[in-house]
Image 1 (cartoon, rainbow, N blue to C red):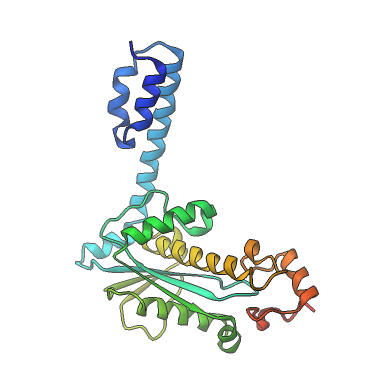
Image 2 (cartoon, rainbow, N blue to C red; image 1 turned 135 degrees about the vertical axis):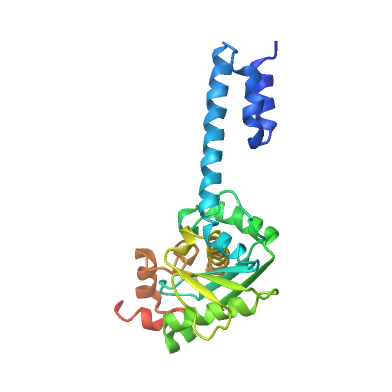
Length: 253
């Protein structure tokens, strides 16, 4: 008889899609340890099916264009409209047709570790990725909305493959000739926009963590430029750094 340890090892090594077939031979096993393993892997498989269903829903917008013959769809999102310091960063991502990346979601719903993992997967699977950033000085000069549009325009221009259609989180980007559709809360409804959300977030976070070594005392490595108590305390103590948005900090002093 196969030991419980051997069964556990076998189940750990199989592809998640093969769980139902693998469990067939153990469903009548009356050992408590085996019963527990079967229940555990049944739950794991149920969660897997639920995730596939979620991903399928998040491809609804893309599939509508695929059916029309539009294959090169770029999801676009930005990160960093609200912080007191640092750039606003946008990303444009073209995924292969019907590319479902397990765990991919709006970057705000993911842990930093999960975002980093997904960043690498997206960069590996994407047909093209473009990134655009606009610094704090320009944000102060032209305002955050225009700066956001500028970052998005740059992200599109930095794609190595020209998209046929843009799916944009919430807004309509001016001065872009490529057809576009703005989707409210698009980073939770479109896989392409979610991918752009992750790329933009990880790119900006990495920059803020790196720049924290240059501008110390503001806790940038933890707050990413947002107005946390520690960040405000740093501004009151040290004044503004070269990456602070002056137009965002008028009420601090």
